[in-house]
Length: 203
Ligand code: GLN
Image (cartoon, rainbow, N blue to C red):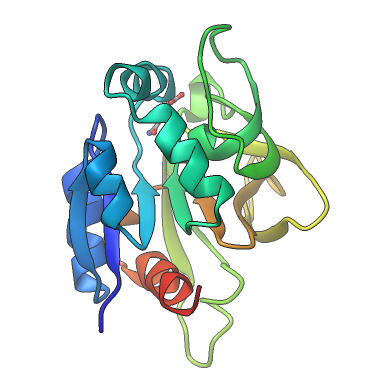
């Protein structure tokens, strides 16, 4: 049976994630209320604007239920703003922005700076591009964060291979929680979503 995977649908590129998850074999539910959150086996937090998403989690009474499900071990995948939401520590955000504290990393918002605010690169992704005959992954960064430091138990899955940000960490996993700085939902390459569907299936 396919897992039922939610996409947090308060703000951001919800539809692209829903389509990528469906293409990767999941059943998909857009999540705007706690009763919907209760039903899903895992949750994607999309790209968008993390401070806005933080505010809307409060408006929709979803913050506490979401923190509770994450503490309980619900698998989650955050891309870009979603990575920021999942992190335990955020640099360069608003003082009143709340986050979910589900991933033991320090993330810097808008880290790549003006000149490379948005860019694309091919990168290696542990567990995906190291499979036999696998191609590198096209990664699209849009005012993206990077992971500045990781705690024990956090696995680094991808780094920037070249250019001014060489070596910066842009994909991580800790147990059931996965995060990427970039947006696999916009490239038509569904391998990251497939990785998450598998993770949810075995959780
Ligand atoms: N810069 C945005 C933020 O801080 C994230 C950008 C994105 O999700 N594409 O939330």
